[in-house]
Length: 220
Image 1 (cartoon, rainbow, N blue to C red):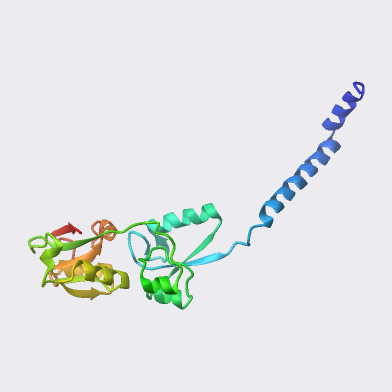
Image 2 (image 1 turned 90 degrees about the horizontal axis):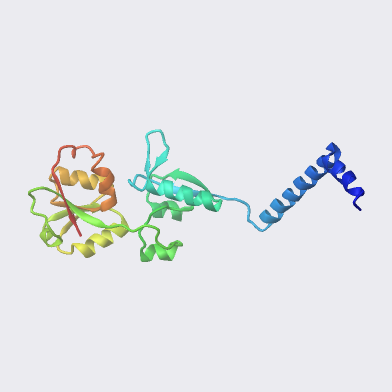
């Protein structure tokens, strides 16, 4: 057997033998990949609905998407092998989901109606709300809103929350979050019921009419 060893080494070092071994290695690798992927379902593209709700997500003028939820969920999708297609939506999230224009929505408050119609995952982020007012309007706590007009986003979950938090206030719904802020800056309302994370972005890039407003934030 010792005499055969040099011949074996010569074979291993020969081009033909190396080619055979390389081909065998390639076939073995291909077989491993096929076996690994055999039990996986084919990749599907999920349509993720999005509108303007900074800092979670917003639509740039060129149509591209940016925001916290956009970055976080894209990374989660990449790690799990899911393909996301972000679809700008110009109607309510509930309507877009119900009419099957999108498959998913990145951030929504849970309600009984949504639990009945859709599958709602466990929360991946929590939200808090606050009162936004002009300095000097005397809004320092929720009790100061009694009998005063408070604007809020005209969204099902937000409407439910503001009614519970400010039962003695006169509520004024607005179509968008920036419109809530603008109603405060103009003095149209005494305060606005807004999400804290929205203010993080809105105070850095203020909507029209709020550029020089002296604002006060009251945590709830």
